[in-house]
Image (cartoon, rainbow, N blue to C red; front, side):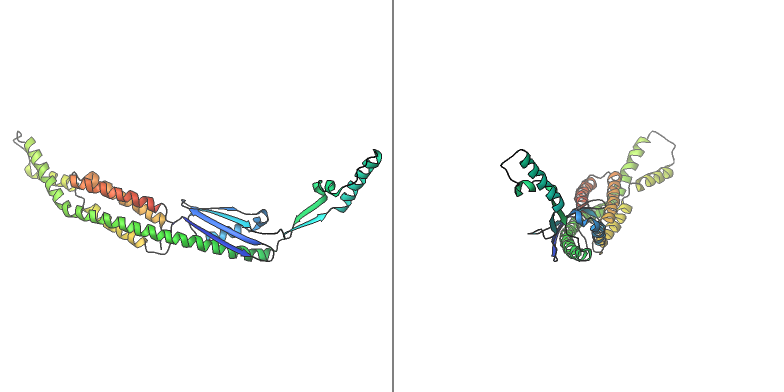
Length: 293
């Protein structure tokens, strides 16, 4: 099954301490690149999260956003620092007494001193946290992979459509290829004969042999056979259930090489036009393959 590297997934889970929301998005990349943004208290679980993603995704730039979605901060405890608070009250009262102020010690003024209140995160139940994270993460990964599969199916159909067009053009080349070599041989032989008209002594048998050898170098049948093999391999790769993006990319380079060879070998105008048409379709396929996992 062909998978795209572009996708999005979301997962939610909760326990008694917190609600968790995980969002994932991915785009094409040469390798697997995972970037995770998560609350500080979840830092110990970062490697576990990466390992889960790596076990199911092999390529792409994957961004993961982990948020605690809460209506209340049950995970926080706030405790007054009473010894420090008493010293503040005593200090304020001394100032009032010394300068005979009519002011009084006010709670609002005391609370302006941020060190009066001790704010602490509630201790995290790691076992419960792991269960909740895995639940939300697996939901998000499933959504991401589902979208990548749907996009991959579209890419697959598009590539098949374009390779079908190329094979139609190759069939036209295959029809005229034998005639090209013969015509080229005849044309070259005629030209050389004209040039040698003024020479009385030359080995015609040797000349015919050299012409045949040179004309054979213009034969494109071997390249056509290899292209048939490459496209057969490409079709096989499109139906196997594993990441094939790199293999398809390499195979397309080989296809391009054979097509370029046909273009450089053949002097025929029609074949030159067919080569341009094939290369146009190959470029479109190459763009699609860049998005395949």
